[in-house]
Image 1: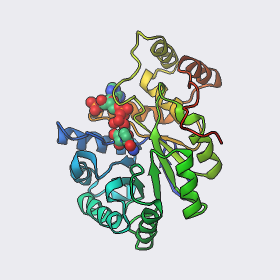
Image 2: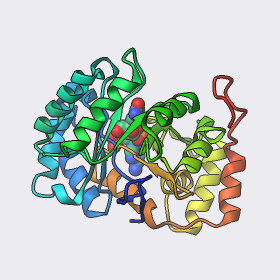
Image 3: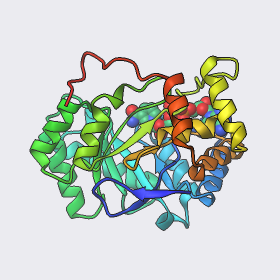
Length: 281
Ligand SMILES: NC(=O)c1ccc[n+]([C@@H]2O[C@H](COP(=O)([O-])OP(=O)(O)OC[C@H]3O[C@@H](n4cnc5c(N)ncnc54)[C@H](OP(=O)(O)O)[C@@H]3O)[C@@H](O)[C@H]2O)c1
């Protein structure tokens, strides 16, 4: 599994990690086994949130990482309604207790809400001082929000911006990815399979993925994941609930695509025009 530096942190993190939203809802034992097999295959970047299954996702993840905490780059998120100065600290402590750990490798504001960013960032700073978190970032932030974070927190922040990114949703390529690249912020793409809506083999784009996959003895999903992490600041966190899915996803970690193959995928899934709400750099 390819690892790369995670934003301004000095940590090498798996380019393909593991999401956990809705994971463990139907079959907790299978989700735990899948997460562990994914870790065996190098997918040690594990993403969760206090929101997922109302905190119970963090509880089953604790079982999955028991005895293996040091292998993992563990990320959780505070809900916007909890993201006041005191609320963020309390939410982090609840997440640490559920995860049965003493630290998070990265702690994110899940999306921007009513609490001033300055308060949330002050709480993140306090959590850093007490080493309950080792870095912090944001999620679902546009360039304007990122600039505000930078103005408050200074360079080296945020460590990452976790955002929607898959072949049929490439809006972040217009301004968010360029801003993050310029400012040394990692971009963690969530829902890389479109939250279960992956291009089928009978669609034009799906056929392109399949053809490229066949030349590499790979799968269409592996080709898609590799495209989504094609530059050094990009990470992807697919969610697989079964060992079969997880191991397939891990297989993207060392796949190499040529420039020509990347260009074919780019053409098959065009990024579209910049969204009106995203200011250009
Ligand atoms: N920050 C945010 O606001 C935010 C928002 C959304 C998601 N996220 C994070 O990103 C993670 C991933 O996004 P997501 O869960 O929305 O969707 P996703 O990873 O795009 O898709 C998950 C779906 O793909 C299926 N799948 C996974 N691997 C597969 C494979 N190899 N073959 C066939 N099907 C496969 C899963 O099925 P099975 O479950 O049956 O394996 C599930 O139905 C989340 O779990 C969460 O950690 C963050």
